[in-house]
Length: 248
Ligand code: PEP
Image 1: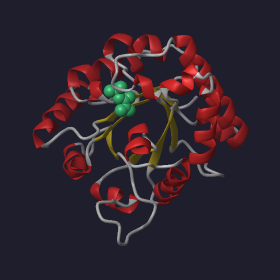
Image 2 (image 1 turned 180 degrees about the horizontal axis):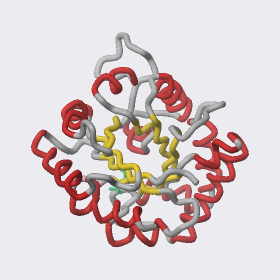
Image 3 (image 1 turned 60 degrees about the horizontal axis):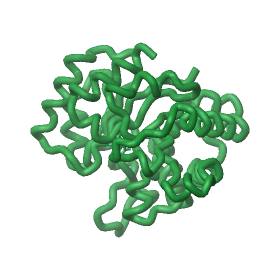
Image 4 (image 1 turned 90 degrees about the horizontal axis):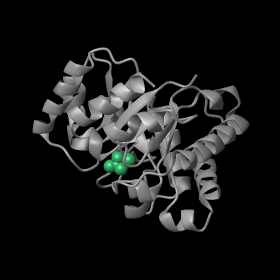
């Protein structure tokens, strides 16, 4: 069975005061029975990692550069994330693909660098609303997976997050049938490409997951957890999602 994961993507939110939310989460879940990862802005990674040192809650980055170092102003290498205390990194988020023009080929290079540095990767894929309306969702998602995940990867450190772009931050959520269709297709593709390792790679759903809809989403086949944006910022909300995953 794939691991269950609740991952929080804080995006460009959070400062030192926001670490109080992490303390509250830790107080509620001193020993979570699912994997919990929080991916704050880069400026908070080290402080958050210190806060969570010795706990079961992990810290991740939101992207990394494929190179190990060099003249790349504003970028951060995978090894730097590790040095700051991160154990995971989100790659290919639709906001990175849209705002920074990241292609699947670039995401694949980032993934190779992250895995080589020992980071677990959460690779995001998902269709736009226009692509869903054009009935090409499965082709788009399959192409992004093919392009973004390096060949020959093994082990549970590879996680896929299916995030329909139109569901991110909008309060709109696909039907459970739509989620089931895409997750089943992703699972089949991972197994075909990576065999037994592909059967164990967690597939997260992301896009307007809230405490109120989490249980219904986690009951869908091949949904192994969630990548959560807005609702991961407040411990009270993220706790409801983690609880739903623990009992799913
Ligand atoms: C995300 O940014 O990955 C995300 C899923 O955001 P939200 O939960 O706010 O829709």
